[in-house]
Image 1 (cartoon, each protein chain N blue to C red):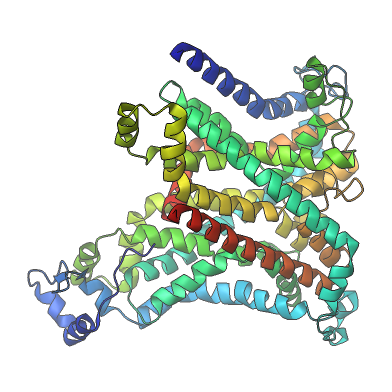
Image 2 (image 1 turned 180 degrees about the vertical axis):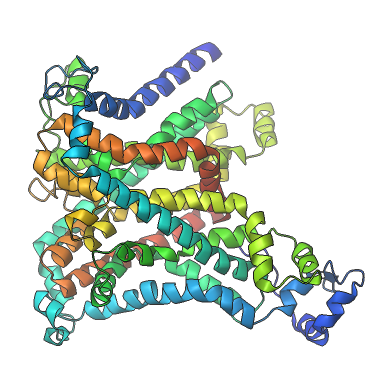
Length: 272
Length: 339
């Protein structure tokens, strides 16, 4: 009975695992197939001969290096800037006492139910007025302050013992010094987690860059990929190569930082 | 949520009576926090710094949020009562207030009802389906009988971190009626080819399948954390009392998981209401508008046809629905857990 259950359990787990990875493995495999091989019946899983033509074509003819650069620049900038802005606010909410603090914080938390799409139309008009549409700032600025980030850092900073901060003050450290040399290092685990979240979120984001980047040369990888789909829908192998280039960087970041990422999800859920 | 305690009046008085200088004397108990008669521990650090510095730390984030989040929310609401269109884009004076006209027009627009229906289809079928798959996966991985937990967890989680646009591109080919993997896999079981993305009946199920594949790993992680928080002695006691595994699941696991389920249910629902990239990449809302979602309609109206007043009205209806659905789900779950 126990053995049957065990076998059944493993069978289901393995079938689901296969269903989960097959699309991604096929994507990688198809990206190395000679043109046309992916359009065969029955579908073939392995390339008859390996080729990197589609990758070279993407980089040489289809400007993918530029999109890659755009995505990287935006993701890194948003991540760094938002960490500074949100950590300052999260720390203040956790460790300073001021009138209306809890009300203000509660208000911010409540407003997380507002979907981002609601802000997009006026935001576009505002940025248009400021001349920031179709610039990097158009993506960076709205991404800099985030309620979720403030929330995560506050929750973490609450656990810093006050005595530690007080000791630093007695030693003559100013407020900013305490924040920078004490709080930031102490908050490192949550900052790393948030950095991964933000980096991946910005890299994978689609709707806002699609709206605000109006010129081809400013596209991020997802926007460029969706655009490419319009023109090269028949070119399966090329599209798969484009998908690999888009997915690979976030996969690498995830693989390297798995521990932090998964812990972040659990923190957000348990304390939320 | 708030782990700190509110301080009462007399404690406030106490705190005011202490000058900053006091804290540097190093009296026992002062440096490490004062224990008051109400037993609430609070500390010098919190008290001494009010106003000024805190404002300095908060300013960048709050200013950005005010200008680039809260102001646009309000502006969007105002916008939804105007006829802001492509001409107003050049000169804002072309925009007029039109009262509820956009909303009236919206409720007369069959395309809006279609998009609303599709989005509900996606949320009502896809949301619970994704939750069930997540829970089953969590239960299986968490089972005593299973080893290689880390491996399965990693594999199931991998799609979560992928780029939605890229996997939508990949799945478009997997759904290919002639050369796609899925139809080939089905043909092994004798199922004849389905035109997944070309048939109005199958397009939304195809979108749902992709979404579940992409998302279930995320909720699974949260469910695993929830399962591990259930104390073992509950199960041991149940076993001693002779409860079957199914009874244990029903009487212990599910009730103990209720808060997790509520959280996961709400975030999943909010996310699913915002369906956009999958139909944008795979079907452009077709065939016959069968995968047109609210956000896709909003995008098309606002940023393709520049009917921004109308589009803002759509955005606000979406907001209202998400808000109401969150409140309802919260209330229903609360009622259940009170019983």
